[in-house]
Length: 161
Image (cartoon, rainbow, N blue to C red; front, side, top):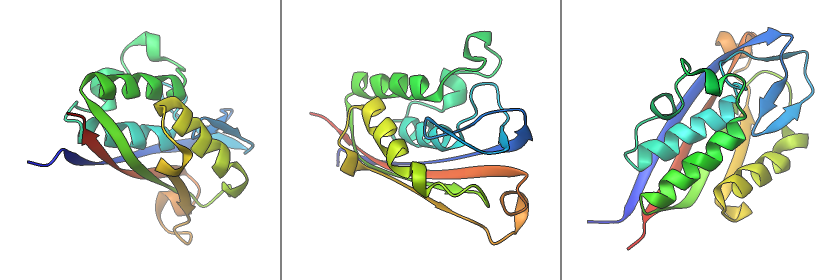
């Protein structure tokens, strides 16, 4: 049996005025932010679900429930650090992660490197193990009309012997 495990994650949040837009741990200037119990970082939420899923450790809702007041407004970067700790405790190491943001706006190119650095730092891995990209949906659906954002993530873990 191989020690490699693949995980995938998906998350979605509604955009609302009066909130900061946090993506990949970066405060991105924009007229709206994502609604959620924590900082609603859709990119990191998808990534955490992929990581936990690959390790067979459930999902972010089971570890950081939105019914628990201690996670109200929580930094998803801090939660990602905790997920990284859980992976190491379970004997897993990240091989690589690929995360895609689905949003009509704003453009994330100016912030992409900072997002990669935040994720790599939180997980204690090399920059080359993390990839972040974005796409629009050509004006289609809730991401295309600007009412929300979504993210997909896929990861490869290796079980340490």
